[in-house]
Image (cartoon, rainbow, N blue to C red):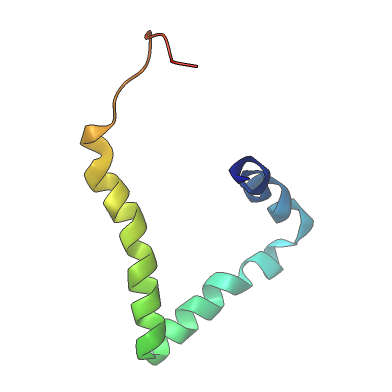
Length: 70
């Protein structure tokens, strides 16, 4: 499932011109600038995902040179 949707990040941007792709960040920025509380809460919640990943980085196990289980 993720393999199929993972290719969208490479495929979809080529389908749309830059002026159209820049519309999403413009909308998010304008909603955030208006101070709409629910929008800011949603943006803050989504921002927690990469931060949680950064916190968990020290616990990643390096598998280079090790045989992997099938």
